[in-house]
Length: 396
Image (cartoon, rainbow, N blue to C red; front, side, top):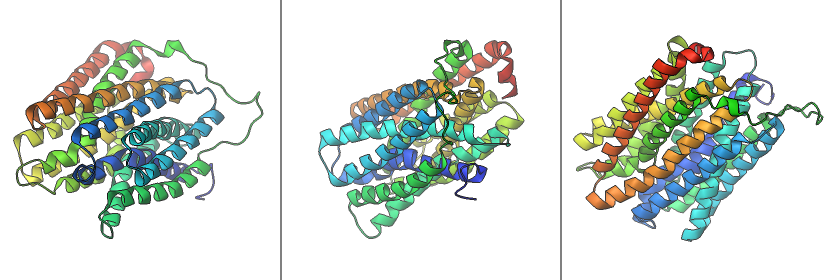
C-alpha cells in the first residue's frame, strides 16, 4: 500500500514528507537554529538578509511554477526542488562563507517553492475518489510536521553536540531519506507526447477575485514571516524569558499539525473566506502578545496561535485558489504564492531596520499586525463585492 503510487494514503504521506523537506529542512530549520547561530556566527542584520534572500528564492520559484505547462515537467521540477533543499542544507553544514550562505539560502527558497507549490498541485491532481478539501487539509498538516520534525532533529543533535553545523548535517541526511520516498510516489505513469496534457498560460484566470486574494495573501506573507524568522529571539528578548524561545517555536509546530485539518473542515462546513478572516484575526492577537506581556504562558499561547493560524491559512488559501483554477491548480497557486513571497521578502528587511532603530521588536510587531488587518479588510471586500460574480467561489 505505502509504495502504491495511486494509493491516497501513500500520496498524502509523500506530500507531507515533501513539505518536511521543503518547508522544514529548507526554511523553518533556520528559525530553530537562529538563536544558536546568533550566538556564534551571525549578526541580526545578516540573519535578516538570509531570511529575505530565502524568500526571494521562494518568490522566484512560485512565479516559475506558474509557467510549468505539463504534469511530467512539474514532477521533474518537484524532484529538482527536493534535491536543492538537501544540497543547500549540507552547504550550511560545511561552510561559513557569507556569500556561499546567501546563494544557498536563495536556492533553498526556490527548492521550497517547488516542494510546496508544485508538490501540492501534484498531490491535488493525484488524489482519487475523495473529498479534496478534507484530503488537502491532511496534506497541509505537513507544514506543522515540518516545524516539529526539524526542531526535534535539531534538539536530538544538541544532546550530543553543541555545534549548530552538526544539526544542519543531520537535517540534510534526514531530508534525503524523506525526499526519496516523496520523489518516487509523487509521479505519473509515462505517456506519449501527444497524450500529455499541457496547460497554457491563461490570462482569464486573473479575475478581480484572484487579484484581491493575491493581495490578501501578500499581507499574510508579511504576517507569517516575521514570527517565522524571529519568534524564538522575540521570546528570548523578553524580561525573564531568555532560553524559552525554543519552547515557543515547538508550540508553533505542535499547534500547526492539527490546524490544517480543523480549518479545512471548518471551511467545508462554513465558508473559506470567513475562515481566512477568522484565522488572520487570531494571528493578529498572537503577533501583539509579546508587546504587552512577558508571561511565559501567554507567549506560548502566542506561538500556538501563530502555528494554528499561519499553517491553516496556507492550506485555506492554496486549496481555495487551486479549486478556483479547476484543472490547472498550480497556476493560481503559483500566482498567490508569488504575492505571499513578496510579503516574505519585504518583512524581514523592515523588521531589521525597526529593531536596530528602536532596540526591540515592538514597532515591527505593531506594523506587522496592521498589515495583516489590512488583509482581513481586503478579504471582506472580496466577499461582499466579488463573490456574487464567481458562482464557483460560493461552494468553496
